[in-house]
Amino acid sequence: MPREKGRKVVASNKKARHDYAILDTYEAGMALTGTEVKSLRAGRASLVDAFAQERDGELYLHGMHIPEYTQGTWTNHEPRRTRKLLLKRLEIDRLIGKTRESGLTLVPLQVYFSDGWAKVEIGLAKGKKAYDKRQDLAKRDADREIQRAVGRRGKGMAE
Image 1 (tube, rainbow, N blue to C red):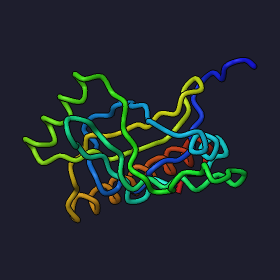
Image 2: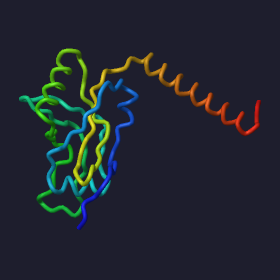
Image 3: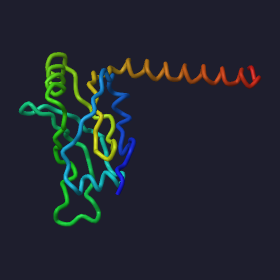
Image 4: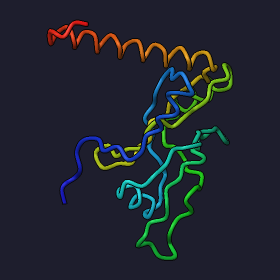
C-alpha cells in the first residue's frame, strides 16, 4: 500500500487562538497505541481543555480526548490518557526554559497526519486579557467591513 502524502487535519483548537496569543509553534510527534491511531484516522479527536506540560525533562499532552476505537477489543485505549510528545532534546529544553521563565504555556493547536505520521502542532502561548480579545474582535469586524466596501466598489455598487 502506498504511503500517504500531504497533511490531513484531524482536529483543531479554534478557541486556543481566541484565548491565547500564539508566539511560536512547534510540530511534535505523539506516542500512541494502535487503536488511538485508528480512531484518529477515522477523524475522531478533541483538543478542548488540552495542554502540554513538562514532567521529568519530557513533555506530555494532557486532556486530549481520542474516543475508543469502535472495532477495538479489550486492547482499546483510555480516551483521556496522558500522551508523550516526541521532540528533539534541544526543542524540549528550549520550550521548558521559556515556560518556566516567562509564564508562557504550551497549547495544542492542531492534530493532523503528516505523510502518514500522527503529529500535533503545539503553540507557545501567552494568555490574553479580556480587553485584548475585544480588540481582536473589533479589528476583525473592521477588516471584514473594509473588504465588503472594496468588493462593492469593485462591482460598481457604491453606497
